[in-house]
Amino acid sequence: MEKKQYKKVVLAYSGGLDTSIIISWLKENYGCEVIAVAGDVGQADELEGLEEKAIATGASKFYCADCKEEFVKDFIFPAVKAHALYEGKYLLGTSLARPIIAKKLVDIAIAEGADAICHGCTGKGNDQVRFELTIKAFAPTMDIIAPWRTWELKSREDEIEYAEARNIPLKINRETNYSKDKNLWHLSHEGLDLEDPSNEPLYDKILEMGVSPEKAPDQAEYVTVSFEKGEPVAVNGEALDPVSLILKLNEIGGKHGVGIIDMVENRLVGMKSRGVYETPGGTILYAAHQNLEEITIDKETQHFKQQIALKLADILYNGQWYTPLTEALLAFINESQKNVNGEVKLKLYKGNIMGAGVTSPDTLYSEQTASFGEDEDYNQMDAQGFINLYGLPMKVKALLEQQRNK
Image (tube, rainbow, N blue to C red; front, side, top):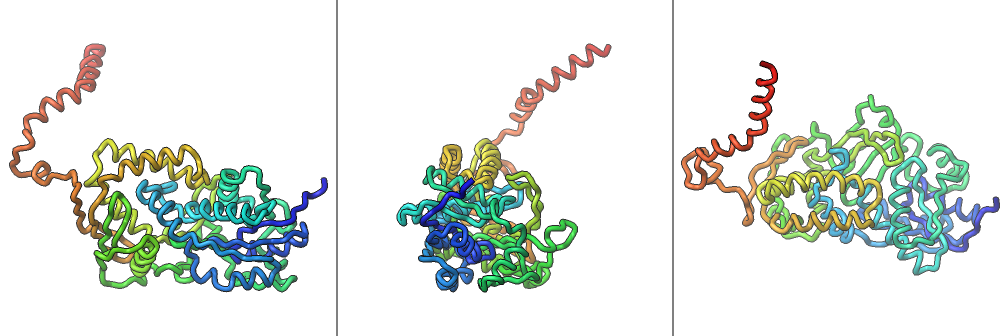
């Protein structure tokens, strides 16, 4: 079957191994113009020199879309408010960044009159789904090119050879060929020795956002996070914009070895995958937010919200951000956060986070009622009638069984 031809393709460009060679591959296979687009979600130094590299390797144009503030306000903060954790561990660092990047790709593709969007995600990963579902949500008729599903290259070693044959500069080599994803929220590491779950990660070799707990200071540090309607607004009493707040907590958490996770997760495509994630600031935020919710949200809402968090984590992991269900769940989450206001003090020490006090103008905690001392709010004799009614089904069942066994 004759391959479909394209005149102009917008490429999701990171400058990493995959996208470094895709520009050449697209031009060789389609003879098309390639516009490279990087979404700035806080990769920092990884963005340096990208434009020069993209143009030098064949791109006609380069865009760097600043997504940082939108990424934090519209994606990270909702996840924090929901306490969304995939499989109890993963703070969704890559999952949260993909929808905003993909949306920017669509915006630029439409503005440039492109007839296709290309990404460098592998056919084994989750990111191909996250990118393509977002593209379908905003440009349903746009063609999508996914080289990993069609080209002759079968491994990262093949990619390196392809790049070397065409003098395409790479920042990695065969010995440092970890697959990484970096943004404001986290840094992930996959591949090489990590592919064997029996291997302990070489933390001193791979960590970039912080240190291992063994190398953290011997002195604990306290950090206070202030929240308004569930969103963090200040650290240690200093009001900070969303991006600066995340960066500040990353610095504090990384220093103390906080937020390092080693897990084998279940990918959407059906296989298990092992990765090491660094999320220092995010781990602090999740702990602080949870502590504040404990005194500001009633029991029934709090327990139901935990169920919502499980579902939301799954759909965000699976790339379904722009769906009616996500919108509905986030509406519930936002409603639950109206009274999540206050300050949380945490103690950080060698990878551990311990609560050190929480205050809120909207607290539901009554020291008088909860006290072991005498109070006027609670008549302990009321408990007898409550227990009799609460335990009535158990009592009736036991009596009937006794009668049957006579």
